[in-house]
Length: 196
Image (tube, rainbow, N blue to C red; front, side):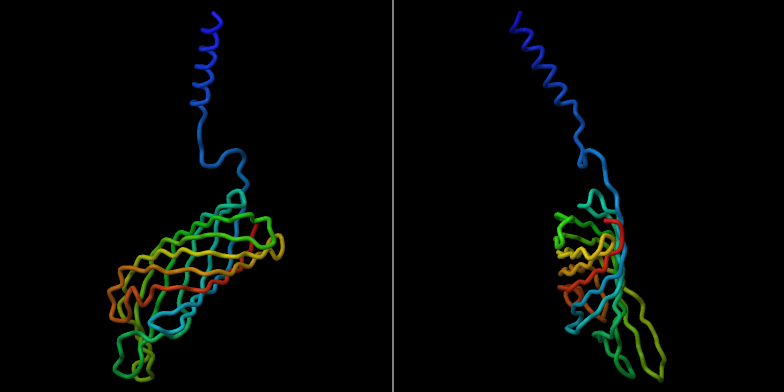
């Protein structure tokens, strides 16, 4: 009788253990959010390129961000195709979903790992006094951009991140540039304002 009682207790314990729901995030969820400007410096077509944009997101339990960002080229980078009266320059921009994991966000300086998955557009423009400004037809592309950041907690509601990322671009079929000429590393500076 004692052995059968122990067996019944073991079976009930096993079934209750298997019946517990498993989830990615357990317990109460602390929410936050942020937004801010971003500066990226890299290289397109072998020339220095400066991208300016912004990003923002929902912060879950101080350690995971789901958000988005968008970035555009702000300086003149020569296109691979020449114009009848002078140089042609790139128009370039992209954006997408951004996911970020933050390690020990309560530390004065901490690290994070992020990835952008999205799409963008590329075209070229003429800038000549004889023809004015004229844009070409655009070309779209797919981008994946992983990165790593070091973040400084300046105040409770303001943080500065510096890091590096790498653009993996595919699908460019334009005479202005190519996927390998647009792919490459960037230095990244982000100003984060929000509730962390």
